[in-house]
Length: 392
Image (cartoon, rainbow, N blue to C red; front, side, top):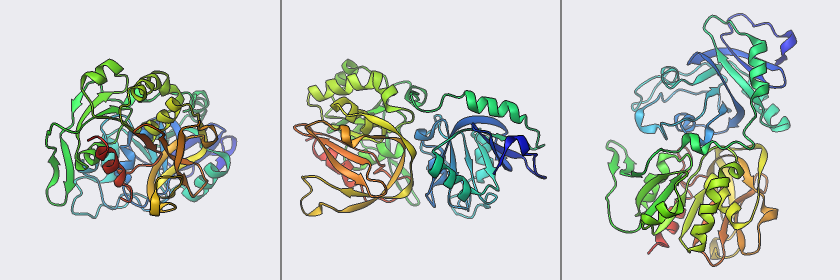
């Protein structure tokens, strides 16, 4: 890494990352050309890069993959988590690996270009990750030009003028625009995705703040019929669907900003004793509705190997059990602000941050991590079964 004032482009550089503090990182661009602004984060997963890059929770973010070899399984249409806005780009250590997988339909480089995402290879991702860990996730601009022509001053200005994720409501940008009867089933090798049976009960209404499709598939696998509605759907419209339970999805941005319109609806659902289950952003907004607060994290948690421990009452013999989980979040519930009647159920063994709550006297709980994985371990599927099982 070097600073802007003394950073001429090295020979062969066709990509660049310009941090808002003036730090410049050169590399080899791939995927789409042009430039994009976002917050730089890092993800420690060794697999599932396609699912990561299509997760709406990564909207307005540039993902640094700590695993050095990306691209070896290629890409395919089945592993896309969402077709809405997601990560604007990614940073990798080695040049993208040539595909070598029987499911692959296109090279990662070609797929990135098709989706308009910018890639930067040849970067010391270990050094960049250490910088994020010590100084926090920075705002930056990633750019790719095959001819290596960059207006560094303009890129720096763009990065400095971008307001950042804190205070930003991104759910409205990634939520679906209309109601949808979810019909996708679970994936099996050789058969792909089946179709969900449209049974009468139990009926889950899922509020889409930027959801991954695999969440809906797991709800179906657990036995639910799922109807998905946009982020700003009113309480009246939700109740008109006669839900047995309401699911609060993951999504990008600041939960306090999204909560301005989401929290009043969630509070009203709690008042009506409607069973609730929240994941990630949905978990954070459930906590806000219960009276807690959220805060921006220094570096965030993103990866497929995060240990989470079960704490509090109600676990029986499994108290203290550790789940290996998939995570993607830059905000968290402040456990010190949990009011009386809201119990902490899970904590991160990395930093002790809150990873789960339940509300006393209500059929309402949430977790900070992603029990649907994609990518990641499947230790936590029981949460879908728990939610659907309480719906009758």
